[in-house]
Length: 277
Length: 315
Image (cartoon, rainbow over all chains, first blue to last red; front, side, top):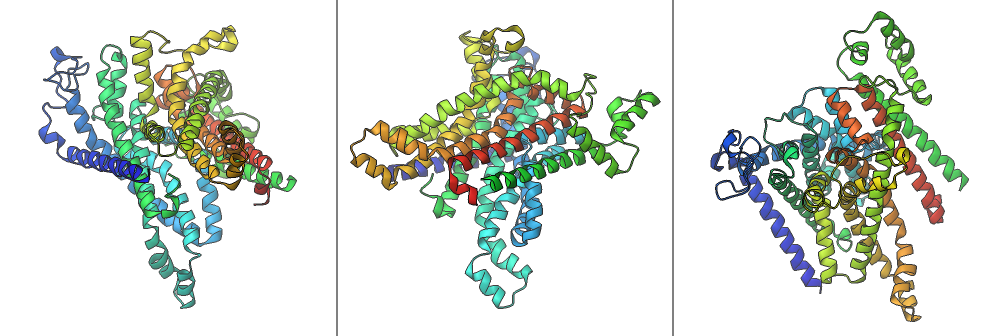
């Protein structure tokens, strides 16, 4: 029975990578090939159900949902990548230093735990309120601040186990400086947990960004985004559910693919966990 | 056991202190003069003076922090700019909806997650296992607010089985049927976390089912159901409980959006309204209450483990 699962896993991985590659292509080229201008208002065509002319139907302004969903991919991916980068830039150095220097680690991990006591969306909402205006940069900071501590945690615990390795001891015995050990022997080996955590960060952050946009506190409503479209469609949910269905399907597919990719990478890069999943 | 409780309690106090400090620092980051932020541009000098007396905004930052902390200990989280009422009272008025929603969502989490995980673990790699695994993965990837909207379309819009939005207090009206309004939201909220619990239940059950005492129990000729429910599930309970206790934060996060979707008058919709209205005292009040609750729940779970598994006390 073992190989059935393996094929299933390979198949799901194939599916995930396929979806992600298509979404990357869409996010880069969508503005050049979508059938309609995503912002063009055509009131005569409002609330049209899906058809050959409008694959995903139209919204209350007569805008083409298909074009808007495809163009919205770009915002989603830009935000996902930026937030993951934010988490990496703050999370990796802090995590490595906390794992290597015990006292610093105790202090930083206490703070990290305290930040993590605030549920993700509540912290992001509060940060959006403090920064004032909706906007891309503010969303990146708000959601990045939520996910950076989680990255610190992962890097911290990996560093803790890495520094106990014999080769670190050997390097130290040979007189290597702490800086050299941190960079040449520890940071390099952090690559796999960091990659795995980044895929999960991406998945969760695009979900959270969509939630912020859905609540109307993310990026400005005139930028087509999946969460924003679902927010606008709420009034017409019974009459025109397609306004909400399609952005949600794209969001769920993206998150699912990143989760599948993350799971597969974790299995691949960390053989100890293989039997668990 | 006593030293364990004392150590954990000390840790909890430190965490609460840090949570209060973080909220204080965040509130310092709001641009503008606190008096005009909190009272609006038309504040009278008397109002400003009264505000400064309670919160010490005209004093050095350490005095402000001291006052902030002292007010926190007294249960004074400030006054809402919008409602012109103490923040704690407003949160209290909204708590019922959120607590009931949370409990019902937790029932969904446990009621779906554990059976699904156990069934999958009993027949590993079967089609049941694979489909449950796939369903769990899909569940973890679907945004709860989208699931909520879809349920609303189906059950309220098309089938007219359940109400689509709103909620009237059960405690005030005594009408338990009002809980019907929370069924769809609770399912939307619980499903995502049920997926997580199912995965954990499956993997910890798989670990336990490999143990020697399970083989012994089977060899004794015990029925499958007894082996699985009595011998295996009990021992797999600790990791499952951990995940369920983790779901608190995720349930709170999900509730913020779900309450908004279903127009429920809970704490989650309160914080969104407060953000849109820049009602800073209410925002920080909710942050404090939720984070302190999280710290306390963690403390209680730690104690529960120590009670369930004596080995933990010595770590």
